[in-house]
Length: 179
Ligand SMILES: [Fe+2]
Ligand SMILES: [Fe+2]
Image 1 (cartoon, protein in one colour):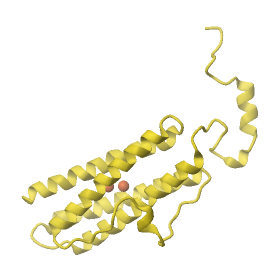
Image 2: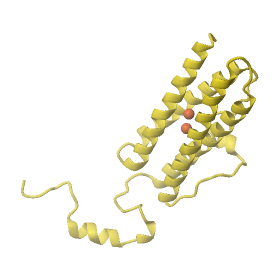
Image 3: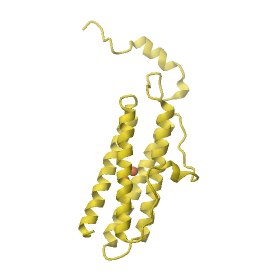
Image 4: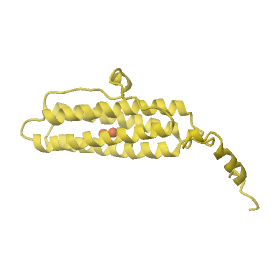
């Protein structure tokens, strides 16, 4: 082990870091396609915002015999989706992009749909469908990013794990309600 062939030598590393310091966290070693990653993250951001809104609506509209516990779950999910939206926005900025909060075209950018639903069961089912869409799209994004942007990947993995929890919560609610 005379040298470490897979690591960049210190001199080159130091020189490279001094170039384009305005790019902040994005260094020359960043091997992902930054524009594409930002575009994908903006689609995920739109999805999260739509999920915040849908869960919020369901929280306020939940009524009936099981309403209280279900509404509490809707509110918690809504807040957690907001947390995801914030994480994603932060990462977009770190990547020298701009988070897209434009209400115009939000539903087109979003993977998940905004369905109001009438009964409590309808609402839970629609939320479950949206979670399943989110799960698949996050999984695809994780595979796309691979080892080229491990920070984004770790963030997406964390979010994916929570969407899976959300889906699981909703399935349990449906079972408890005998739906
Ligand atoms: Fe989310
Ligand atoms: Fe979720």
